[in-house]
Image (cartoon, rainbow, N blue to C red):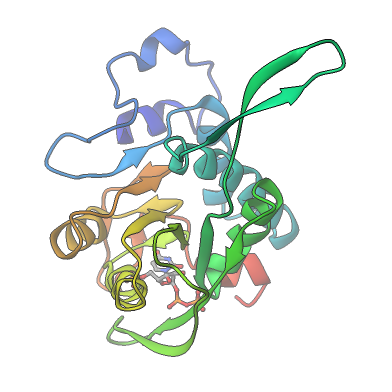
Length: 238
Ligand code: PRP
Ligand code: URA
């Protein structure tokens, strides 16, 4: 994954698709990381634009919206559908529609940047909010807000663009499980191996869907190469 990212950035040469053959294409990653990385050229482009420090907040928000559509489609590809008979203008046929849902829960504040794309895609969605903020010195997240709709027997998408230590995500999953959630999917943009391992260990039943699996965390628990502080870049609070 990381080699492929490097091949696609920097000196501007065209990377033919064949050069990417053999890279992870989704599903269970090697080296024990259970994360599904969306493999689409547009997703790669969007993540690269998000990573670029020259990308200003307005474009950053648009890129986040577009990437979230791709991630949400991947995260919901196994949703059940209701088969029903409908009338087209020409004849009767059987078609599939979605039941009510899913529930989408952004982790504040950066997760808010991913919310509107999902609400637009799934009109019968219900929305919860989990407020968690990492302490700047310890990087330990503490909770400051929790408002959840009914989650039992519904697919729940927890959305947070950055999975670093995994502290925020594991706390959020704990809260949704305490509220009765059993079908939980974690949707992120960039993940660190440390965060994936933490979620996999505490919540092996929760699939993680992301756009990039990065190398490591630095001493301040920021993801490398990463994209910096997502919330600050999204809301211009640098
Ligand atoms: C960021 C990010 C995640 C968290 C990830 O939020 O949006 O929620 O850090 O780090 P972790 O995996 O180590 O917990 P932050 O706490 O900076 O708050 P913000 O979204 O309000 O900026
Ligand atoms: N939160 C962010 O916004 N970025 C990181 O790299 C880690 C946590």
